[in-house]
Length: 504
Image (cartoon, one colour):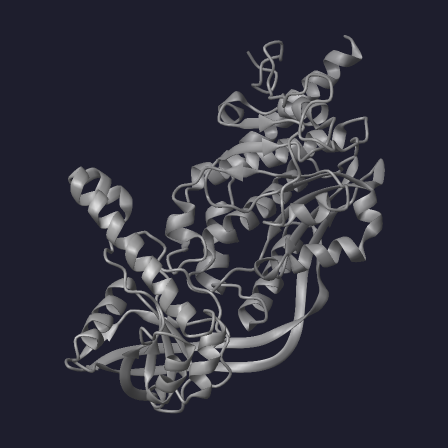
C-alpha cells in the first residue's frame, strides 16, 4: 500500500471522526445556554464580561485544554442594574425600554418628569434660547418613525402606490429630522451633553433596526443623567402625545454603578503542537457584546463555534503537528482592541501563523470565504477545503486572492500585519435587522444546525492546516486580481476532486 493512500485514508478517517463527534456528542446547546442564559451579555468592563472569561477558562480546562485570561489593558467599568419606565400621565402604562450601556442611573426612587421634543429651531441661536425649556424635563432626541412595519411586510401586503408613498414620506421625515439636528448647532452626541448641561433630567431616544420590535442598543455619553432607549411603539406614542400638547410624563428608575477603570482581557486557550510547535493555527472570535440582548449571534455563536472546535480537536486530534490557539477577544465592539493588542504583544505568534479562522457575523452557515489578498491562498485554502464534506462546502462561495477586509472584525488585526487570517462569513438570517447590536440578540435566534456545520468546517480546516507539510505563503497582491489572468479565482475548479472527505 502506497504512503499516499495511507495518508488519504488517515485524512478520511479523521474527517469522519470530526463529523461524528460534532453531530453525536455536540456541546453547542449546552455552551450557548451557559454563556447566554447564565452569564448573559458581555459588555467590556462589566462584571458579567469577567464572569464570562472565567467561565471560558474553566470550560477549556474541563476538556484538558490549558487556558488563561490575558490582560491587554483597561476599560471603563460599569454594572447595569434595573431599568423601569412608566408613563404616568395622561394615563398609566409600563413602557418597553432600557438604559444604554455606561449610562448614569437615576436618584433613589427614580425621576418623574414631563417629556418634550427637541424643537424644530430655525438656527443654533434659536435652539440655544430654547435650551432653558429642557430643565427638569426628559428630552426626546430621535425621529418618530412613520411605520413600525419592516419593508418586507409592506412589499407583501401594501399596494405599490401605498408602499411608494410611505417610503417618500419616510425619506422626507428623515431629511427634515437631520436638518432639525443640524440646526441645533450640535451633532447627535454633543447634543446630549448640551441638554445635560441645560438641566434635562434624562435623554429619551429610539434607534429602530427596521425590524418588528427591534432596536439597536449602544452606549451613553452623559455624565450625570440617564439615557434610555424606548421601543419604536412606545417612543412613537410619547412623541405624538408631546407633539399634540398632551404634556406626557414618565417615571424612570434606572440603577447602575460606575466601577472606575477595570482590567480588560482576552481568553487564550492552547493545544500545543508536537512537530512544529512554533507554527500556529488560531481559532478566532470576539467574546464581548453589547448588552441590549445577550450577544447570541454577535458573537456568542462565533465563540461557541471556536470553543466546540477546540473541544472536538482535543478529543479526536489531541496531538496536532502545529499549535492550535483559541483567541476569544475582548473589546472588539470598541475597535478590535483585544485582537489588536494581542498582535502587538505576541509578534512571534503572528510571525509563525499558519492560518487564522475567524467567525463573527451571525448564526448562519458559512457561505463566503475570501483569500484576503494573499496571492497563493487559493492553493492552500482550496486544498484544505477539499477535505470538507460537500454537504457543507456546497453553500460556500470563494474569492481568490480576494482583497484585505477592513477593520470590521478581528481577523483584520492579523491581516494588517501580513498574517494569513480569514473570515468565515455566514448567511444573514436577517442579522442586520434583527440581532446585530439589538435587544433581540438572544439564545432563541441561534440556528444550531448551521452552527454545527460551521464547527465541522472550522475543525476540518484546522486539522488540514495543521497537517499541511508546507508553511502558508504571505505574498500579498497589490491589486485584488490573479496576477496571471487579471481575474479573481473561485474554488472549486472543474478539475477539483470530490469534496466529500474522500468518499464517493
